[in-house]
Length: 133
Image: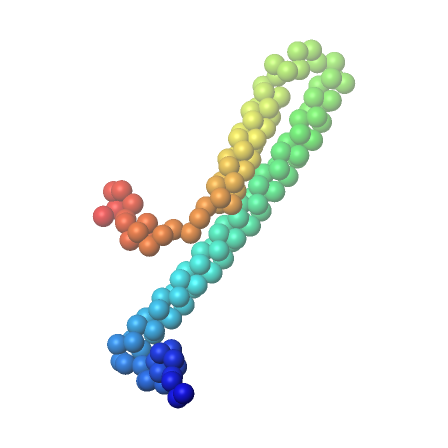
C-alpha cells in the first residue's frame, strides 16, 4: 500500500555534484546560445538598416542627377543645339547615372544577402577564413 513510484524517489534524493554541474552547464550553454542569437540578430538588423539608408541616399542622388540631366538637355534644346546626346556634358551625366544605378543594384544585392543570412554555427565561428590562420 505504501509503494512509492520510482520518479518520486528520485525527486526526493538531492542531486549529486556531477548532476548539478551538468545542469549548470546546460543552463549556461542555453544562455550563451541565446546571447549569440540575440547579438547576431541585432548586428544583422543594424547592417540591414545601414544598407537601406545607403540605398536611399543613392536613390536621392539618382533623382537629382535625372533633374540635372533634364535641365541640361532642356537648355541645349532651347539654345538650338543639335546632336544633344553627343555633347560631352550629357554623356558624362549619363555615365554618372549608370554608375549610380550600379551602386543601387549592388546595395540591393547586399540587402538581399543580409536578409537571407543565417547565424553561423560553432564550427563556422571556430574555422578561420582562408588566408587568415
